[in-house]
Amino acid sequence: QVQLVESGGGLVQPGGSLSLSCSASGFTVDYYAIGWFREAPGKEREAIGCISSSTEHTSYSGAVKGRFTISRDNAKNTVYLQMNSLKPEDTAVYYCAAFNGICLVVMDSVAGARKGIYAYWGQGAQVTVSS
Image (cartoon, rainbow, N blue to C red):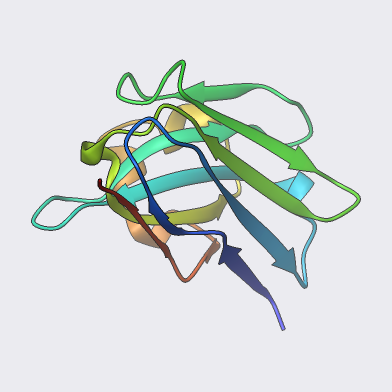
C-alpha cells in the first residue's frame, strides 16, 4: 500500500520539544520533496518547511525558522520534523506530503497551496502547545 503515515503528535508545554515522523511505504521518500504543513483551527493550511529530494537541502517558513528542523533517514524511508521552543501558536494539525518537484514550489504560498499537486499526504498529527 502506497502511503505516508505520521506519528509523534501530542501535548507539550510552551518552550518544550516534540518530534514528528513521516514514514513512507510503497515508494522511496528520497525521490520526492517532502513538505511539512500545518492547519490551525480557523486558518488555512500553511507550508512550514520542506526537504529536497536526494539532498539534505531544507527550507523553512519565517514562523518556524530557527526552531524547527527537517531531516530524512533513507534507511528507514522516513522524514522527521523536530520542533523546539514550541509556542501556543504552533498548535495545529501537522501534515507531511510528497511532491514530485522542488521545494521552491512547496513553499510558495500560491503554487504550494494546491493540495492536488502532491502525490501523497499523511493523515495528520495533532500538536497542542499549552500549559
